[in-house]
Image (cartoon, one colour):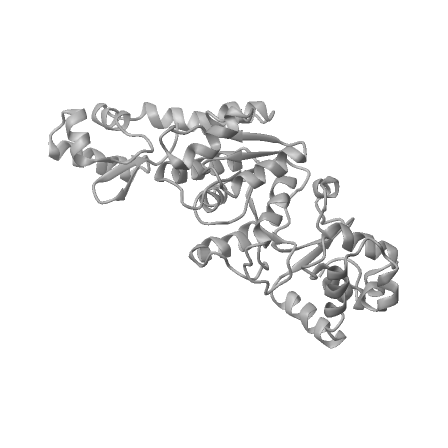
Length: 371
């Protein structure tokens, strides 16, 4: 692990890994006892002198002190073997943005390439049970933001989070996944391929130690880190009681901008985002406007999209104009375009080969991009 060498690292690892103790209190204790080793060896009477600690927190520290130094050595060795590093409060790798939030994490365990925490960063979050439209929109937004050099931050959850990070891996900005588990634990299991790719090409971070399982109470707490690392939070889809709205609340408390993608009033998946807009969140209409509001300027992707449109043949343009991110079936497209079945299927095949249109399930088609 990074930081001071030798035994001191294992004590910081130990203190960072006490899940029942808030980050701000870990920081206080390290300062109070001069170093993390002092906390590890603190007697009960020493802990009793600290009014900041609750009885439950004192009990948690005492239980953690039961880990032997040999066990801590083994834990540090495990981290070294599996590429797990630890960035502790005020160290160089620790994100400066987090130092200013309420209850900052004492340390962040991470795998992969540590991002430039000084650069532009946007959180893209949303529903796990998202619509096809939401998934397509999130992936596009993640890709476009990353292409503009923006770091895309999310929770690697199923649905919107994972789609945004999948898109972000295709651009220069990359992505950072903030986990509610240890950085060696893939959750959900269905995102295993994405988990491995982010660990190789982006960065996975967590305030929880290796091997930590996905306890439900971990995820609302990790949301403060998602928003804390970002310049703005963008909610793509969210139901009325969505956990993504917790991230938006943390962002507002931290003085960050919140944006939402508007949706149809009849869709349950849009009730949370539409309410955010009603309460004053910024309306996300397209990537270009958003980048301009964030004072980020890029013409590369816009020019690429224009070239792609200009190169379409008449029949391709006609079919493309009948599609968006809501799935349309073959029968609907036959009626709208007036093309024969042979010409329509050939045109759809050409558009699919060029990556402009996707067949999400048999005979149902959507745009592969938002233009």
